[in-house]
Length: 358
Ligand SMILES: [Zn+2]
Ligand SMILES: [Zn+2]
Image (cartoon, rainbow, N blue to C red; front, side, top):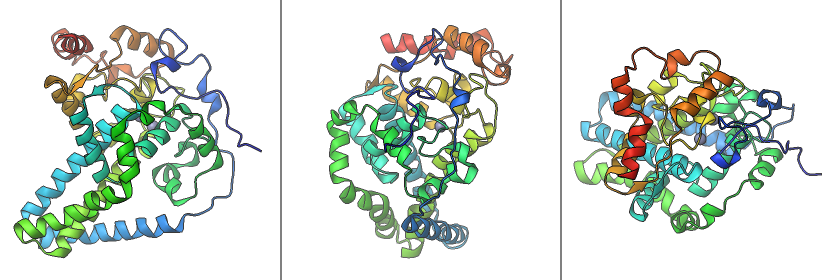
């Protein structure tokens, strides 16, 4: 018997999924949220791997505070930023949500940085993330937050995939990913590329170039940096699906969470799940200016490597806020008095549209 996946999606991925003039779904999706009881089959390899990573990271913190060279710590931050952009701008905003288009050189750089972050190849990452948006907070959501904070953080990776998640993934259109040679090249060579980029180079470079010890080179820019990257993405799936405000759509679990944003530089998750094809983190211009992924996409647009950046108009956002928001938009959006007309006109979506067409 095929797994019981509700054919009615509980979320949107692309503009083409929307059914109402304010770009939502007709059905109240809060009634679709589900977490049917089940027996988990544990993935012991991942459980021991995560234990090693977190204990190794504690040793990495000890070395960073005691004997490591400053070049190694700086190098770890630099690699972390590259991985964050490879995953945030690459596998997330470009390949999952198609929120902008990128020329081949930029796609290659994003693919290499995404590989360095080792969170599955782009193809699998995008398939699972599209499934997460389309079936958010149901049994077909890979990290269903209805199963609790730990499950949505890392528990889902400590268990075998549920049959509903596999079935949900099968229903996702992936033709654009099959058609992208950069994505397919990475998929084909992932098991050769990933160990070199994520583990070997970040360890060898500090030893070779500035005589770092093997221990510091392995446990700081490699293990600690990688474990931080994992926890940052997991925190969006867990904390930003559990705590915070819902100014755009109160029927969704994803929330605006300033704490997650401060830690992860990504946390305006109610906005993101309401309008996932918007390349920005938020409608809030100041938060976009402080979000490295968005700044990077803007910079790439300036030099012509990124184009067709998609945004949602303030009129649509306003309509949606009034129909489905929880009444906190004054804290999180344009209603906030700190957004003067001057600021809005300087950094608004209209500005982006004009720049795109320039
Ligand atoms: Zn989410
Ligand atoms: Zn997303």
